[in-house]
Image (cartoon, rainbow, N blue to C red; front, side, top):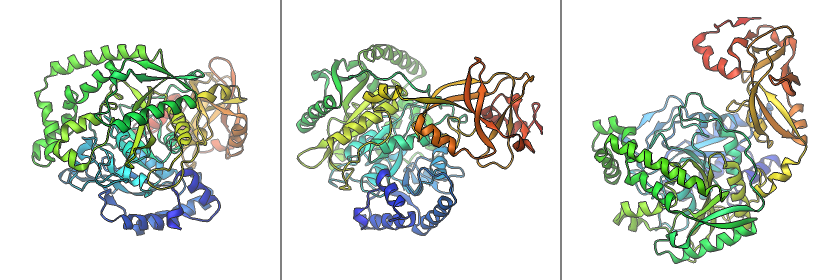
Length: 619
């Protein structure tokens, strides 16, 4: 029974819906699997089974009370450079460890959505490495052959997913740390656009480049999880607001491939052969190839470790290293010590060089919609990496190091297997905020390829959500309705997933006309505002977001709107009318007038320090 259970979201939800399994059953199955693997160096902190069983029982009660839980009973893991309240954060350095008092907001979002935390996973120390061997907590191995590396730095997260111990895991990816281990373990590694997911509560590697990533069994799972995770974080200086829906890719979409002489497989002839096969499969998915000049991308990649950006890794842990000079592993210390040779003038020169490379690479994106690369040119044994840890690690970053420097989104997808049973993967890359299209294309490619998910033996699940690039125009022709949201459904707010999980997308941010007031309602969970039309009143107008839903999902969404809220009409500053959240008058008893703030986010951001001032008053 245990081995027949797949933890991908589709299969897990089906089991819960049929009531053949409960979250408590899944926890018991997972801990049997973990015990069967023995000391595999995946976990730095595995939660006690009894604690997770208790969480699963409480989760069942939340579900039975009708709480909206889009990730009900979905088990997940967190890389141990992300904070989870009450647990130690080590970054794979015991001397650095501290007990987190607050969780990363990403972890909070997952728990609020009903996901079950199993534990925190191993990594290359301070997320410095692509090999998965740089940890005092042991070396997680490739799930297909323990002689080979799992890839890093998100090594434990990747192995936990591929081995069927969790449905998904959070990792990080500054230079390829989420994509490389995904390729080596036959799973998906989505590296989002920088700033799309909050990095608050993350031990930084390079703060200007860091990304939290999702490792999952399918692209569809990554896309669904990403919709819950993403959202602007006002407390994260690197957070960015998504521009909303971008123009669709053309049909057929255009994919770029480096000129043959610019491809490097480091002597791995099988990888070279499998990459050619993957390109053929992409044509079957509706793509047309275009040869590109990879040189400026490779030049950008070299800046990360062969340039002054390595100084940012030192900046992240400078005070700790000064107090604990012997705490780091030898190879980690040697890399970070290299930062001391760079001067401030070198940093500025490198910034200038990067801007020039951005301009050069921008021309490429006028010719193509997506770039297709091997995730890595080859794979190495643990013994090989032990003998040459720096150069082999550098080889693995050849196709990954430039992505964050050039502000690209990326997803690593399984592509096939070598004759020796080791997996090979490709990466799809596109300019910032093309994440949804990348995951959709990756999902179609993955399902067309077939095979199994990770090392679970379960067949790849066909994609069930997200815009396929070649179907976007068809979707745009659907009957769709626009809805203005003012509070808990805004981007980054706790109920936004009720829109994104239904295929809703952000059209624009705007304001109402001036004759509207906004009130903070009392006794609502999560906290919600109420929008009220007040003829004759002249105020600042209220910030709203306009979201688009198709006809079927719009009706279902409206049906679920609880009192005292309702869907009515509101007039925007432009003069146009739009369907909008409004409030029943009876709900204003005990409510606070927050109109002077101009919007829900501004009120939430300032109300703690303002303590209800700036003209706010109770009704």
